[in-house]
Length: 200
Image (cartoon, rainbow, N blue to C red; front, side, top):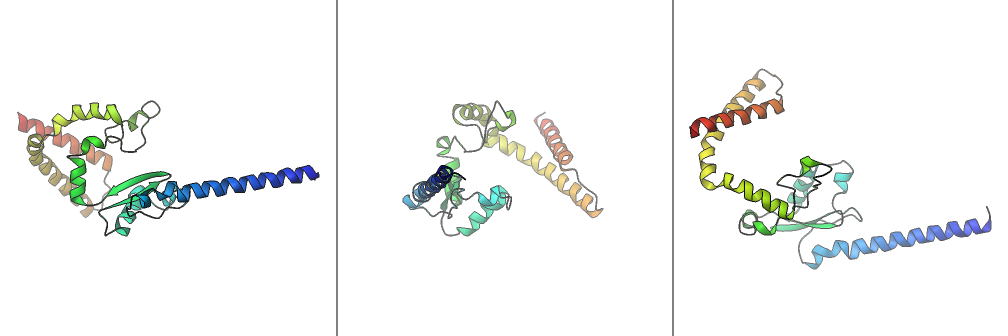
């Protein structure tokens, strides 16, 4: 190997190490110091993945991951996590959750959930769309979920749910398989029919 090749190889390795050190320092002392600077309890992150390494490595599902986060922070009503480089606040206290979902609901339009209406139209639903699109959908859906309308639906949903539980219990007793997709389609159809009869 020519001397200049060894020189360039050594220079390349040195630059790569320097970049890694700079990135590590940036993530550890700037990006991942956000919750500490706010004096909020947080789950210790792994550079550069934040708290999502168990999710990325396939060890846990997102539900299991947040379950473990929840039980590892029993004392604090809120705590912080890092979804890669992005800080995310997790609210645990029921009173705070109620406060956020009622009085401060308008301030939490962006959920931080993947949404790309052009590439993946099914991702553009009420729980993921941001900003003005979310406001538009909320204005359309809100009239259907007033307290009076929910109270009207409650009895019908309860009846349908009891029938579904009985159906599942019967299937379990006979050790038969249950097609969940068909089951919930029937549940929705039964609820819709029952609601229609009650209104008429």
